[in-house]
Length: 356
Image (spheres, one colour):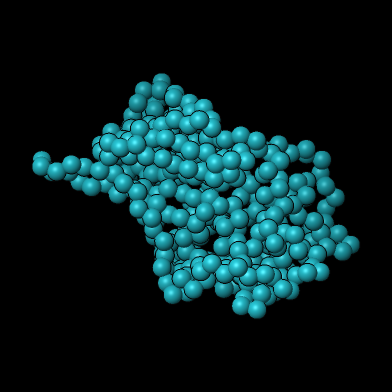
């Protein structure tokens, strides 16, 4: 079973409950954390980076770095400065352009006990957690620096998310790094894949220095190489269904990745943009997300810019899940609309669901 997860934006679908004398609508509302700090760094500032002219990572920095966030008023990026965990999240999220549609607004405090929803990086972090790129909970330690091997781990997680886990590797084992024994065992396979794809390379004498603090320049370079790998891998629009399973929860997901060099527009016939159906082993319907929902009777659109993606996501209610969990075998995800840029499968996109 495939397990997943572009522009900083959270969208929540709000269900307006009906009465006998009122109409019912489902609509989208943009949710963005607001703070003075966020407002200040989000202004359009056409700055030039002044301290990277002769730097080895100048191309990657120019193509990846959000100048409004990472460059000061004098134009300095400080490429050799260690990057913090929150800075890495913002850089990665912005570069990949991840955009996830939430049926219910997420609360970052339910995931990390040292992050607040109003923190400037919170919305980016929520998306990366939802995408399983940041794949742990508890303490995020936003102001601490990130190690080189952990950074590679999140880069490979990003590759898995952006491709739905469908990417080919020529499995010729690369020469181990001289300090291979210092790599966190949980990240060793990620380092091997990153070496094969030429995303991660060693420093002098084939040392990787996995426990060193990653610099801003190194983070920009790995993200840039990741984007180049993705560009070379994909030439079409991908529709990827997936389900995030735990003992007492089930999150249904549908990701659309636009690998074309132009924007993709989906025209929806109503306010409903997607649907999810759960099936038993004989493919009899157990649950349909839209069955108890009402939608505005007006044409709507979803636009996915070149190289970006959008994800729709819903949680199955806990009580319902208890009733049908033992019967669930498959999930079908549907895009409710049409597009001139790619063929939407009216029969839906199916994935298997396995409860451990």
